[in-house]
Amino acid sequence: MSGFRLERQWRGWFVAGPDGTPVTGVYGSRDLALVRMGELQDLAESAGQRMRRACMCCGVSFQSAGIHNRLCPECRTGTPVERTPARSHHSPKAGSRA
Ligand SMILES: [Zn+2]
Image (cartoon, rainbow, N blue to C red; front, side, top):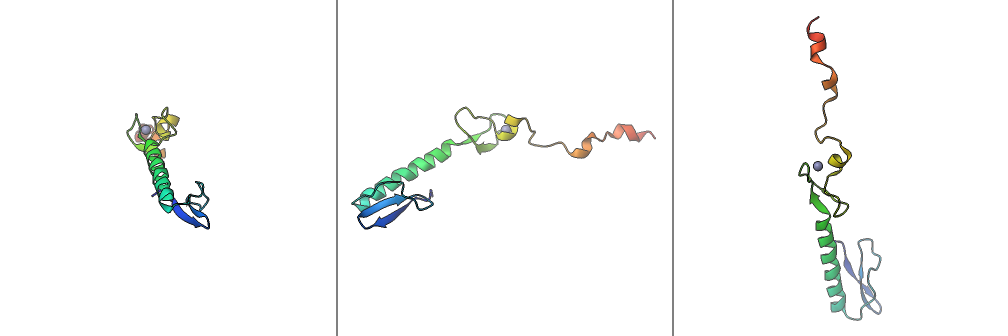
């Protein structure tokens, strides 16, 4: 489901993207346009799969920016996935012997 669709024009057929703008030229044959649409869909789907990676650090699946990008945004920026609760820096030791 990449959102490509076949559009009719007075001269023939063309493939339109999700926003309705033509992404191919006009084909005289509907079959040719269909084949081209299939190619574009395959391309879009395989590109989408490539972009999806498991983080090397925590294993979470995330949207990768490219082959060099193997860490999820949280690991890359150093933000822990499980954030320490804010009240943990209120040390229980300090107040226990009053
Ligand atoms: Zn991670």
